[in-house]
Image 1 (tube, rainbow, N blue to C red):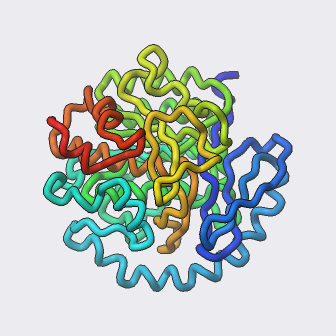
Image 2: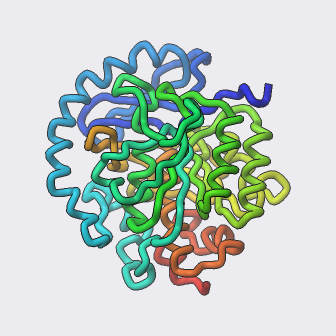
Length: 357
């Protein structure tokens, strides 16, 4: 039964600012109670289970109209990357300042150049302006073919999840290369066999960082073993801790940081808001936290999305690791350096980059 485990993307919402929306993490077979949580101008619905699926399509009926403006916004936004100069989405300024990204220009001149970051997720939008020039073809493990392209549409639970994750990595490390691996369907489900193979293939294809913004409530031995194999090859693996407000991270993040379980070069990542405050839904026990509330990032169709969840705090850490590796950081010590350079467990990119190599 191990290879039949269902994995889910670990996110609370992909939401248009000012609209009702919610892309909660959860098992499609678990009964739910919907709880609304006010997050600035966006209401996020935290829910687990089957009842959410019936309502989800209606939330996007309003959200799609908002994207008419979002598309035009990219007319200027696409110029950000013309010369490789760091410039985050303006909406993320508070979050990026919180983690010290505004103080690293002299410390991260390569901006992640030469570092491959694997995004094992739902695939990506290869035409998105935020991602163009940064993507390798990757692989689609669901259809067993080259090219990890997002499939589905706005009505699907996890549509755009991988693009959103990749967009945040690109904002933190604009010169890094992203290797997309599609293991999750548009409904957010996938098999641990595919995830494990994607991890092994990513390591074999030269990835130095692997981002896992997905998880399951059941133990995944095959994925754990693949993480161990990758870390033994010098790859740093980051895993989202989950959004259930539980006392420990979900798997595979639960195994990370434990040398006996998933190698010493893997870390679990939780979320705080853009002011650095704890959020009740982020699972406890993570080794590092980063902003993961209302993060503006890429969404298919040359659009932007407001994304919340540990799925979106994790790529900030992945991007920071890419920056450090590009500047010559020792990979075998980097996970410990990342933790020791943090501010009470919160990612501090400037402090990380200032550490001895």
